[in-house]
Amino acid sequence: MNVRDSEALTGLFLKKGYVLTDDVDNADVVVLNTCAVRDNAQNRAVWTAATLKRLKSQVTGHKSQVKKRNTHDALRNTKHARRPIIAFVGCVAQREGEALFKKYPHIDLILGPANLDKAPEYIEKIRKQRGRIIDIADKQRDEDFYAAEYRDDKKRAQVVISTGCSNYCTYCVVPSARGDLRLRKPEDILEEVKKNVVSGRTKIMLLGQNVNDYNYRAQATSHKSQDKKRDTQYAVRNTSVNFVELLRMVENVPGIEEIKFMTSNPKNTTTALFELMAKSTKILKDLHLPFQAGSDRILKEMNRGYTKKEYLKLVGDYRRIVKGSLGTDIIVGFPGETEKDFQQTIDIMEKARFDYAFIFKYSTRGGTKSQKFVDDVPEIEKERRHKILLDLLKQIALNK
Image (cartoon, rainbow, N blue to C red):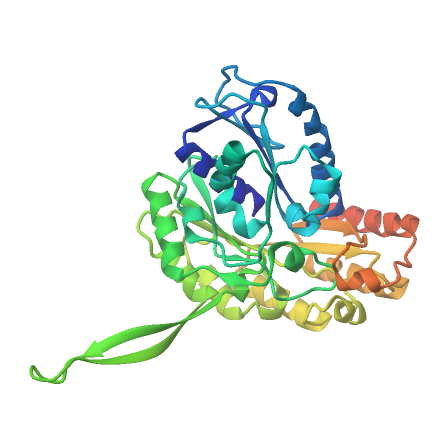
């Protein structure tokens, strides 16, 4: 999601006359787009922000090459030459807010994910007024944000279908960082897909914190004239587009070669999705289906909304219907996880035989419900369980 946000941000700046530079020391604007999903990502973002203080003592104005850095985008506008404006944006900005201004006086602009479309406008204000701006209002993102056509990849494109999440898993920071679930209109999504196809990007990745939460409801107006002398009568009907229907719409866009999506929460993943994947010649036969923990007790504490039995049934249905690759996410050492609970996670690993997995050690995150739980699994035990699952995953791969 952050990769797509960075692309759109870059596109907005390019439209305003900026160019990308690989030389941050000679940039006019430095934008640090941040992720808070994992603790180490947030720590890395804050550390990077601290290192940018040195730029305030330097004067810019040299010409630079048009390239892009992995850690941040340094942008240069040939109309201006001054000490750089530093923008700290994204999920960490949303979570930390005003505290960033107090800790890092060299930061000029703080923007939450919902307000990234205003970045160029705010930077021009700062340039003229020499003030500081913060905007972390939680709102529906302006659709114009997705209109910027800059992309890193010439053949592939990421397309956001929703932002935020309303599932409130007890360990997850997404609701506090990106707000509640908000859906983009199907017609806007399709328009973006079509533009990418025209530009040669025929491989599409649909993105959402949980794509299966997509269920867009709208009122469609239709009319029928009864006769020439009477006014036209209008009738309003409710329409709904769920994720499976949205996938079909994208699949029918002329020129599409490949469709991927992520991520799916097991609690609302359906066999209808599997059946569409099986029939389609364009949707990749690959499913990322995080189960997080094998114990029903821990799953309830996580507020995941399904049981071990329900998850394994989904896996069986997917293997039977789609016969594709399967990946997952797992957390070890969640508060209260006993050895018996952990054995249930191992059992799912052995039965599901995942093709890939992302395995994490639990760490307490501020702003989550689990912050109030006692983090009672020792770090050495988390390390042991982490290694057991990694070794098991490797053994499954070797056996395959």
